[in-house]
Amino acid sequence: EVRRLGIRLLLDRHPGMVGELGAHGWHADGTELARTVQRPEGIALCIASCHSREDLAAAAGLGFDAAVLGPLNATPTHPGVDPLGLSVFEQVMTGCNLPVYAIGGVGPQDIANVHLRGGQGVAGIRAFWPHSAVAG
Image (cartoon, rainbow, N blue to C red; front, side):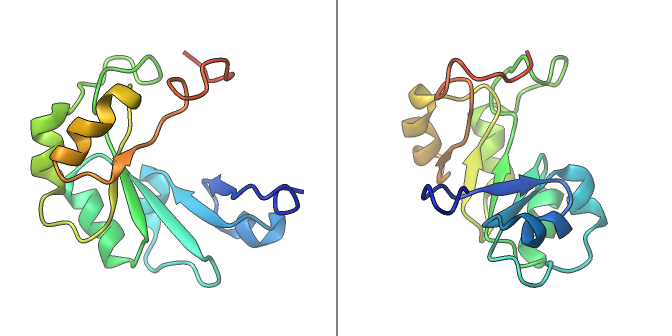
């Protein structure tokens, strides 16, 4: 159905479901990234959720296509987690050979600053889709 509508779908968590459900790619959360020893075969697009330089290095070493790094800002979906801020975001991603998008409490107002720090852009839900059913 999503392909017929022209929507590109990335599945979260288990990579085996990508082919079963006809998705375009896989988004590996931190737990899945840590247990992945090689890039899953047959998946066109693999993106990793990262929170450290080590996570980014793991994603790059596995041949992932891109990563999201954060949280850049405080976000209600991760209460009690200290945000990276722009300086740490830049430091963590420096030298990474993947496109890196900022996540976590980001919106259109963050795009220019993320670009200035070497990031590819921002990835978010609430700021771009304000009536979404995201918890928090």
